[in-house]
Image (cartoon, rainbow, N blue to C red; front, side, top):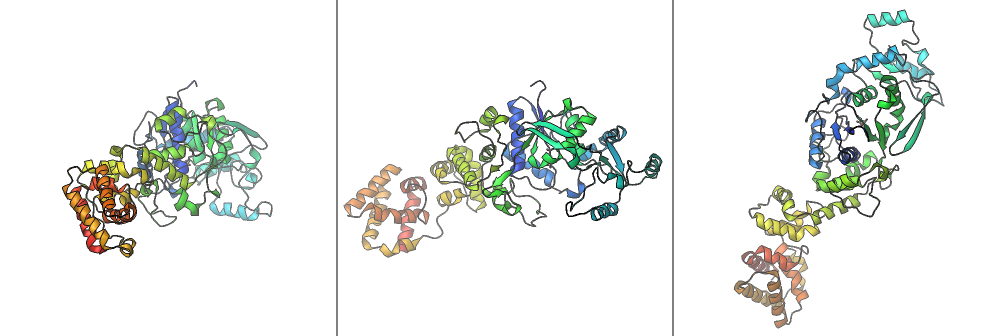
Length: 507
Ligand code: GLU
């Protein structure tokens, strides 16, 4: 690589950031960091009609949460700013004019009504949605169909107009995509896209080329939905700056649901955003739950995203961010769509929770418990509890069920599971357990278990008959880690209290 790599993530602030968007960020980031380059975040807000207030802040917050911090952005600044396209508005017209002068673009004066009429007049069975292209452009009102004088007169009188690219006829445009290899397009099939709108705002097609050039972008990663626009961008590069300046393109494959395309309706289930949006989604009119609210760890989230369409050539699946930076290479990104499987995503999270240090999980678990109304005063206890139950937690809210009873006595006990087989012998047994526990000089799981079983043997009771009731006494139901570990952490006084309380309910 000759030039220092510079990559960009260029979201439009039109909604939440979904799986595919964050994967694009991630591949940008990994590529930049692996090759000692810069990761730029550029906000593409030229389409003001689709602008959603709050969406930009949301994007920053998402990147913050996943720990993929840009080197340059509207927030972080940098030598190539501004990084918000609306703030770069005055820069674009000159490039569009340059294309007009060179004969690669033209002024088009058609009104919305005239455009609609064209769509109606030229609609045929074979061509149900006619486009503004080389077959129709001479039938429209533009600087190619009108005389120079007419054009000048319209411009002088301030007539609203756009600038459109003049797509050449029957030219083949080819480029080498870093993921798909050689890709070719027939320019005759592409319409004359608008480059500059009537309000002097560029469209995405012009802005992406001008900004990638001015920001010295070397590699451009984007979703494959942009592939059909590539010939427009490549021609703009060719006409304006020369193809040797053009970044290398990588069009990332779609993320698919288990049964094919990840449909909008599957959204809530599979494509949900990184975290709940702080505005009401205009499309669904609902606040959407995201990966963060579902209880994913950011480390697990980027790990599972990295593996959606990439692997390191081995069976290895669990990667830290640093490991990903080291191992990442574009030639191992698959060109076929990657299947997103929510169950597999949960598996990643479970692995990350299981392997995390209890101390690292402490703040987030504390928040979860406190949000549910529990008070956690003893941080040392919390850390021990996390260590004890984390193997059983797939998503972070599972900590409430698995650990909540350490901080709050169970509100209800599953007495139904105990009462039918309850008898005096069990009452006597637990009375003896209480006495034994009260006198016990050590309060340690192993010791408690040994004593409990000894008493059972002495009373001719099978441990199996009293273990489940004991568990229900302590946690309220048939769940949780090893029951003597629970008792050890609850402490003598609390354990005895819970046994006594339960006995009054079981009898
Ligand atoms: N603004 C485009 C989008 O929202 C970015 C495409 C690109 O990265 O070139 O997806």
